[in-house]
Length: 87
Figure 1 (tube, rainbow, N blue to C red):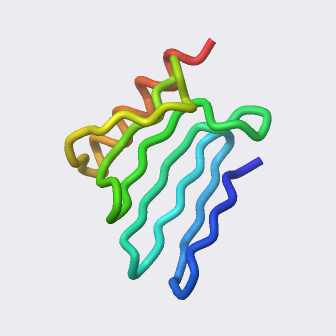
Figure 2: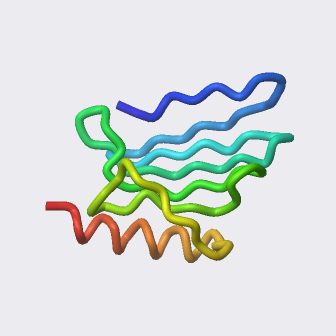
């Protein structure tokens, strides 16, 4: 199952492939990428205009940790690294 999000007065694009999903919302500039297992986020990296870039780590996906801005290729690398950590 994918991640569900609502962004009022925006155009949202959603993708899902197996256990990964992402949302990009315009004009709020919100981007969210997550690994999902049994309808629960087990890892994610998000950007929004209020909190900036942050990650939901595999070891504690309910927490978010501020991070430096990421390029698309860095997000893919982080996703691959997170996938390797999943038990």
